[in-house]
Amino acid sequence: MPPPPDPGDGWPVLPPAPPASSPAVRASMQGNRRRDTRPELAVRRACHALGLRYRVDAPLPLEGVRRRADLVFARARVAVFVDGCRWHGCPEHSREPRTNADYWTAKLERNRRRDADTDARLAAAGWVALRAWEHEDPAVVAERVRGTVGSRRVAVSDG
Ligand SMILES: [Zn+2]
Image (tube, rainbow, N blue to C red; front, side):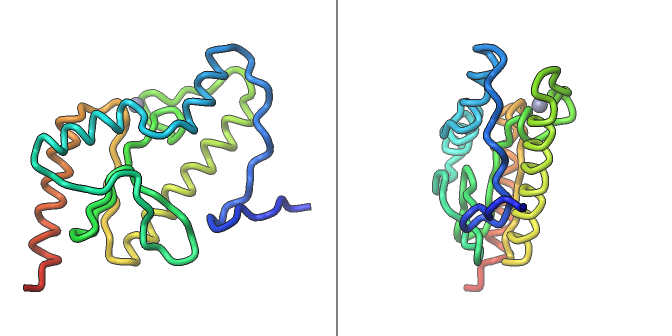
């Protein structure tokens, strides 16, 4: 039997996580659910220091699904995501887990598909999705954000 749909988000619900095999793994699993992770905060601070103003952890104007971005520039229609290396499959830091491999693989695949789906929905709505890895230098990410938002303000502006 297929699992019930995740209300409003369109992807199937994962089975419950297996028991964490160690305190470190448990902390990592819990870390995935925590809002305002350190890399997000660092990127926000760096953007703020550049004079950028944005909404934080705000819902995106997408029909039929509930998605949020870490930084939202509504007027420029830019959504910034700071993706966790482990959970979103960073090529440098996402290693095959030795324990609970099936769970991790399913979770990673789900996140990847969801990220791609979010980006496609944003593009269809006239938005730009800007993604950064949590391992990236926040100052470099902020410069990228400023460049994208700046060019979008010019392009989107209609007087
Ligand atoms: Zn990484």
